[in-house]
Length: 128
Image 1 (cartoon, rainbow, N blue to C red):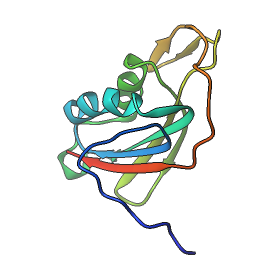
Image 2: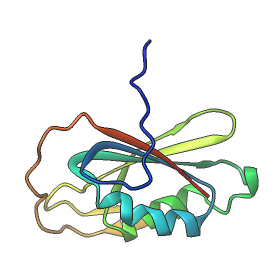
Image 3: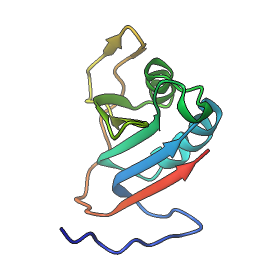
């Protein structure tokens, strides 16, 4: 499999269909998440990866990751194990008119998503 070339930029600009944040702290996620959300295409996905089981000194847990995502208006849809160290959770914009409620948080329905344009662009970030 051939991967696309990786471009490293000092600033994020534009809208992306795929963003991926690697973080080890709640503070780091809380600081970075809203900035990434601002660059998420309406139909895009923002993956967040964090160390599982308190590895690497993390204070992140699945409930904390979901709460932070909900607090910034995105909802989770898929959780997976990346490897022995990292978990990942996919966030998307909520569907218009749908309330989201689980044991980790609640997000009430809001206005419709802005119009979408297809975008294959992606960005992966590491923050700790």
